[in-house]
Amino acid sequence: MKATGRLEPQPWMDSPEVRTLFDSLGRAGIAARFVGGCVRNAVLDRAIDDIDMAVDKPPETIMRALTASRLKSVPTGLKHGTVTALVEGLRFELTTLRRDVETDGRRAVVAFTDDWLEDASRRDFTFNALYADRDGTLYDPFDGRSDLAAGRVRFIGDADTRIAEDRLRVLRFFRFHAWYGRAPLDGPSFDACRRNAGALGGLSGERVAKELLRLLAASAPAGALQAMAEAGALDHWLPEYAGAARLELLISREDEPDPLRRLAAILPVGADATAIGKRLRLSTQQALRLDVMLAKEPAVDVAGGPKAWRAGIHRLGNNLYADRLLLALDAVGDWRAALALARHWTSPELPVSGGDALKLGLKPGPLVGALIEAVERWWIEGDFTADRAACLSELERLARSK
Ligand code: ATP
Ligand code: MG
Image 1 (cartoon, rainbow, N blue to C red):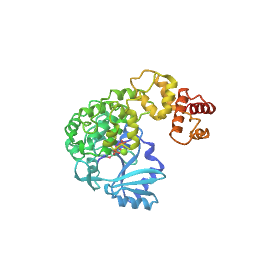
Image 2 (cartoon, rainbow, N blue to C red; image 1 turned 135 degrees about the vertical axis):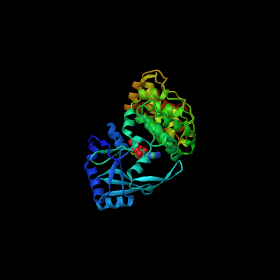
Image 3 (cartoon, helix red, strand yellow; image 1 turned 60 degrees about the vertical axis):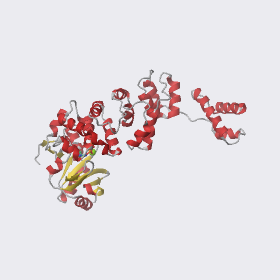
Image 4 (cartoon, rainbow, N blue to C red; image 1 turned 30 degrees about the vertical axis):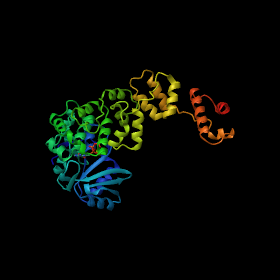
């Protein structure tokens, strides 16, 4: 693989940890290069999330080399050639150069190789096959930089063949378009995605959800999502898709992006969150949150002002209230002030409890619970101003009237 340029020096490429790692591998005669997301983002001058490296020796050799330098390593995925190196608390994924031996559309059987171009050829998109030496020498065998500059997500090789090898690439196409693309989409790549969208049912819900949520996490994902829907790529996994208009509104008002909330914005209010959660293998917590976000009733009383907002925050908790508020896109009222309250106000604790009812001579039982709930309703109705003495006398009054 021929060098095709040079990266601007990046601080993360020359950190003491990276130097230690390259030195350790170098002593064992292992060639290592940065690859994938970190190089792609460096070219774009964007922040990187993690450092992935490609290495030209099998994982056992890598682990031996690291151990010999007293570096910790974890056999993350030996069969797939991945070892995680831990250097001073930083994690690096080191993956041996690979080629596909067998593909079935879902999982590949790979063989290790020492051929960089072979490794590059099995990657999905041109700009995901960028490599860089420790000194910044760049390798770009499929001209990924031109595609990056044009905002074009393009499959390496024949798009239909690449999708037949791994159908998840259809979803990755739209995910990368959301993060790095600009309209119009690359024609041959998009057409191949559309032709193969019918086969996405064979994927696992977890992998689909992961891609979809990553797509939704992009700063402006509406176009990619709409293209995905046009390609039929949502038909199987999210037939409830209701368009991206509410998503765009949500993005214009949200204070912090949240992929699950964005998912709620592309679904109809009242959609079956349990069914969607099962299909996409969401966690129980995610499914419950989605359920609250999609619920029709009770509507958020944005027009009701601070008193109504405080009551809502107390009932749902700060975060769920903020979710509902951000999604109440048609409600009139000062949602900005309501959101500020949800982010900063903590609802007080009810100053009386069941124990106080027992002290009044009541017997333990459902009546105690009902009385405390009645005091709580009164206390919320009074905008949380009643102190313990006032709540106690209300409790007494209610108990006497029973
Ligand atoms: P991100 O910054 O979003 O993590 P990334 O490029 O690192 O982006 P990953 O999904 O972490 O994306 O994958 C790392 C690299 O592995 C990709 O850049 C690509 O070269 C290769 N890759 C990952 N998944 C596939 C796939 N399904 N088919 C082909 N190549 C893949
Ligand atoms: Mg990555």
